[in-house]
Length: 485
Image (tube, rainbow, N blue to C red; front, side, top):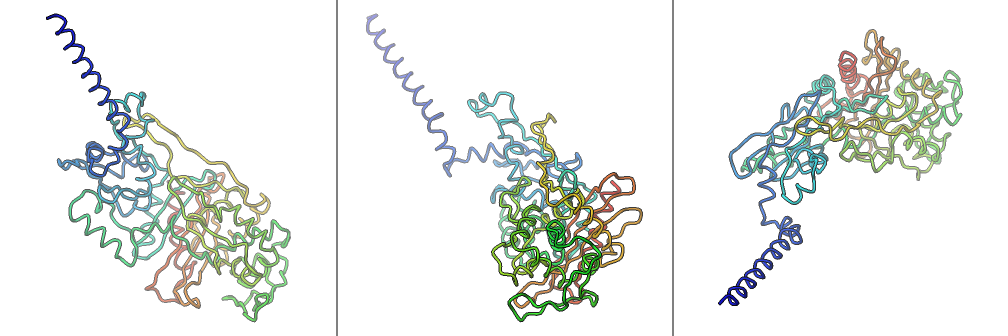
């Protein structure tokens, strides 16, 4: 009898061993396949079963989580959603996530292994850490000034700290409320459809993901290239530039808005934005050197992330001389994001050095312990330091005496460059109004802010669109907000 009991016990032991081995196979070896199965809702239930971490501006949260009591329990909420939408993006239970919500999803959702002191134990137990927080570099006052300045107009603003590359403001209008895409109610689908069908594209991040012809603001790059190459050695020497200027190899004549551009010095040409002078300077510098200078500023960079990807700004080096002339005044197929043009202004303010922009200062656990800290990225020299000194002088002249007087701030040193970019078939579209600038307070040792503003308003009178008249006051408000912070 005892022998039968031993046999039965051994058989039961074998069955138990087989059961444990099979459970291990399912839970460990086959777990990824089950996790990725669309029919498995456990991942979603776990993901939304706890509050999401917050995105912070100046230490204060601009996001939150709402307990719905449903199976997908917590929905994302946003404070001043339209103001910060180009930064946060959205986190939707139906449509996924974008921008910072997507780039920092591991921290915010609690899945990043860096949030746990014992990540291997979490992997085995499938425990989930509380969502961590993402502290941004934004200046709340600058963000609000940019948003108010754009108002109901279509456009974008990007502001940087020149010495570090910290993003101080990133605004795009028209905007939208990301909270309208939170949850999984039927209203979310309607909001999604309305936002995608809206011809004004409110979900488009114009500050970092949309490129425009930069127009005359690109003359900052052309002037730097001409000075670095020795094509111009004296800011006040005549440039031997005919007005109008016939594009090389064509019969097309390029003209100016100003009457004082013929043979104008670089100082006068920059101050009054003479197309003929800068088109000829670009040709004299040559496509190779022009492209090299543009790329040193950040053009043609396919890998820029802040941490989400930024659209590539482009300067074509495979152009003929006539196309090069137009490219050198920010036309033809030269394209730039507002963030890229803020980098151009920041390079001038920072002694010719470019710091790649970054938007996240640090990430933390829910308890506030630092997970990762970020700072200035490696520097790149866009122009000789002596060239940067002369470029700062030229940009100051624009604000003090030229087309950018609307950007002047009492008691501060301000440099700028206006731009009015043509576009559309035969340049039939309403021009884009640009302004790029930097500012230094009277007690500051170095410039504290660089700004780029673009306004694209299809409802405006074509004759009323100018960088100095439309975009410069917005830039001034943003710079004042930073200097007063």
